[in-house]
Every structure is written in C-alpha cells, then in structure tokens.
Length: 474
Image 1 (cartoon, helix red, strand yellow):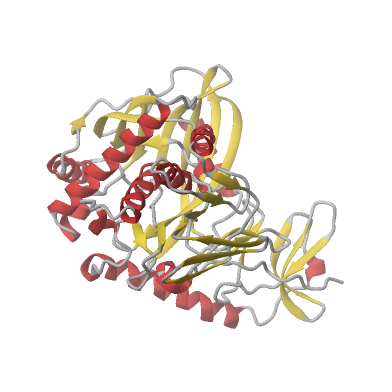
Image 2: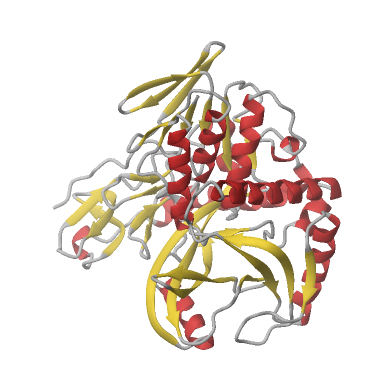
C-alpha cells in the first residue's frame, strides 16, 4: 500500500492499514504534520457549524444521521489513539455555536432540532461562556480539543511501530493504475503498490475532477496572552463575521486562540489586514497582554456540503482519495482513514455511500457548483483581459509582489526585503490561471483551484504538480 500525504488523513489511513497486517509506505512532500493539519485550531468535534439542518434538507434525514454518527465515531477513534500514549493536550470540552441576535437564534433552533434528530447531544443554552453579550448558543457536550501537531507526531510514531515506512520530502506527481497494481511516480523514483491513497489537501490526480466540485477557503488565526478568565469551551459564531474561539495550553499557561477572516484562496483580501481585523476583535473583548502567534491555512469546501472520500472515480479499483473536508479535517480526515481502510479490506461500511466521491447530488451541489465555477471562469478570462499592461518589476517596493513586466514579459514578480528581485511565470501550472499575490503570507496563490507557490515558484499546495518556471529579471 502507498499513502501520499502525511497529515491526519494519510497517517490515520496508514496506521489502520498497517494494523491489518498490510505493508504500507507513506510519503509526504515536506515534513509529517506540517501541512494543513498542523495549522488547524485543534477542535475535535461533530459540531460542524450549521451542517445538520442543511444535510437533512438536501440529502435527507437518514444522511444527516449517518454524517453525525460517522463524525462521532471518528472523534472517539481519535480519543482511542490518544489513550495509546499520544501526549497532545487532549481534553474534553463542550462546544458552542453562538448567536448575536434573534434571527441567528432562529437558525440555531433549526440546527439544534436537526442535530438532535441526527442523534447528537445538542441542546440550546442561553449561558455562553464569552465576555460579551450573546443571544445564546447551541451546545454539544463531550467534544474535545488537542494540539494537532503533537497528535500527528504521535500518529507517526504509532504508524512506524506498526511497520509503516515513512519518507519525507518526497512528492507524489502521478499514479498509474492497471489490473495488476499501481505505480506512484516521484522525483526520487517509483513506488509499486497494490493500492494507493492520495491524502493530500486536494488530489493532484485530475481524473476525478474534484477540483471543480470543491472550492478553497483560507482562514487566519491569532493566539494572544490576555488578562482574566479564558473560555472553558470551544466556540464559534453562527453568523458574520465568523469567529472561532478557544483557549490553548502554552508554556504552563493558557492562550486565547481566535480564527476568522475567511476568503477564497487567491482573493485580493489576502493581506496583512486580515490579522489586524482579528486583533481588533480580541482587543475589543479581552485585555491583551501580548500577541503570540499568527498563521493562516486553507481547506476545500465541497459543493454539496459532504466531504469526498472513496475511489478516485467510478472506473478505479485501486486508487482512493479524500478531500473537501470543509475545515473539519480532524474528524473528517480520521473518518477518511476508517472508510478507506474498510473499502480496501472489502468491508461494507454503512456511511460510505454518503461520502462517496462518485455520488451525484444535483439538488444539493448545483447552486454552489454553478457559483464557484462561474467565478473560476471569470478569473481565467478576466485576469488576461485586465492585466494586458503591467507596471515594471523595478517599481516593486521591498516586501511587495504583483503581476508585473520583467524584460518585456508578464511575470509574477517580488522584491524581497534585501532588495533582490524574484520572477516566475504568472500562469499556474495546473490549468493556466493567473496566480495572485498573497500579501499576508507572501506566496503566489491560484484563484481558480487554489494551488500555492513560494516566491521562487516552489509548490506549497496542489493540485499543481510542477513549480512555476523562473523568469529573467533586470
């Protein structure tokens, strides 16, 4: 077995397969746990914002119940691995979605009814543990939280002990499949395997077309040291602006963690002001002693509201994928490992059909599919029309990037803090969309399907499998 991707999905899958006596090799383009999993807020919960009312409406009440039980099972699977000796600050907490006005409260009433009907421990609670007024919240008890990086390190240890061979700094670039098995292509050689699991953020295999059935969203996180009490629960706003809040252990104390300011990957909104907005929110409601950490991350949102887990397409018998985990990848990624392990072992799983990559749910998916792919088409055409004339690369200030002219050619240009110019092709190597400058992270992001690159063109996120080629500078 070959697993591509060393986040929670890949590590969980590799561990479960190895414990069934299978020979497993896992590769990752960088270091284990340093991708999206390592940048989550660490919430381990089946409370996935406003999920259950929508699922009951678009997929049916049985599907909402399957989703609920699947995520609860994944949550407890994580707890079971922690009990095997993973030190990751795992602790049980209640989880709230809170309302700030009467109309949001009505949304929570409907969501609570749907979640209860799905079999979840949901109830309404007017007492929300926040230092500012709310209209109450929907509460789930017996949820959890942990340090995601330390958990994945623990999973890697368990996987290695089970016999998994792990190779870091090894990128998968393609997979060949035939009746006899699979070949994984990497820059360092080939891997032959009976089955392949592509557990990257978005599969680099275009044969599934999943990149047009899910859209990428980036979010921003701050941790701060504040005076006074911190919330003893995980919390999330039901409306806009979205805020996700919890406290996290750090250096013998606790920090406040706040996430928000989400936008499409490749949006002009990817600027340092996103962190400033979060900082203003914290300072408005808490007395801040210091800002400690900041980062951003992205995930894919499935068009019909359910992650894609299963065979890469209807014709494949040996290649499996998982994507569209909609920012709840700790439980959804763990579930993916469980479902894929069952599928490879030819065991029927009652939840598999809901998450199948080959499902067709036009009623549920069509509105978002049309909206997102219209946006992509507009970017593919509009960026070419609107950027016929570019400023010169020499006009860039230190720390500034943009689509500019260099030596008579349109390029993605950047001037670093030392004044050195960097130029790469402005066309994403996936499908040719023009990349956009991310001023918050100083990266090149594709607004069409969310591939991301360093200032020198190296790949940070797929589905692209080739770097942006360098271009000359004056």
